[in-house]
Length: 211
Image 1 (cartoon, rainbow, N blue to C red):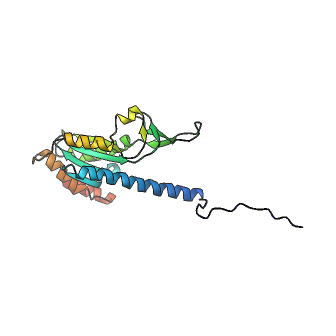
Image 2 (cartoon, rainbow, N blue to C red; image 1 turned 90 degrees about the vertical axis):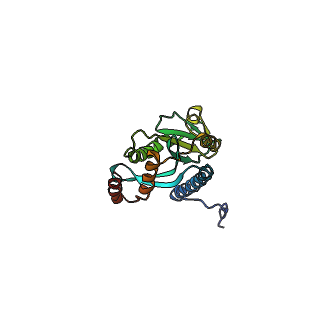
Image 3 (cartoon, rainbow, N blue to C red; image 1 turned 90 degrees about the horizontal axis):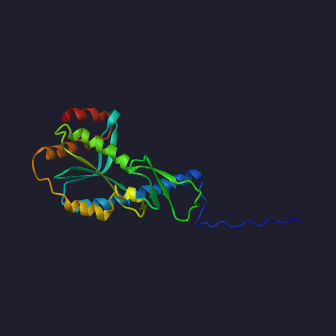
């Protein structure tokens, strides 16, 4: 007599993913969440009445390019906006290169996920913007704004250096519009000209033409 071992039946609605498939799914889900956050910020910026650019690609160092979520212009200067849509709890210091992320229900002994600092990331975007505007006037100010559009709970240190969507709306309402034809307007025009530099070989011609 042969005894058959009964096996559990897998739920066809929840297939088991390979590690590679899990990584692909996490990347796809993060991209979707990022798009949702950027769209929410874009809506707020578009309602402000200020000059705004979205999804801007500019020349960067070493003949590369850098992609910026949003730019807007005010009487104070040029503002560079990086949007993040995170969940869980984020801790760290504004000067840390990596922030730590934990989710509710995780084992207290489990290592925290490390996230590259959006503040440091956006500082690189600000340098790319300033490299263009300083050719017009080195005194033009470039501001670094990181907007947290997700449900993440931030430690006080990180919360003090980032903006929620409502805080972004408050900031926009407090800024004066730049309607002059001076150096700020010229710097903004040059950013608009350079924003389509999408390939490394295009970088030097674009920079040279703006000098």
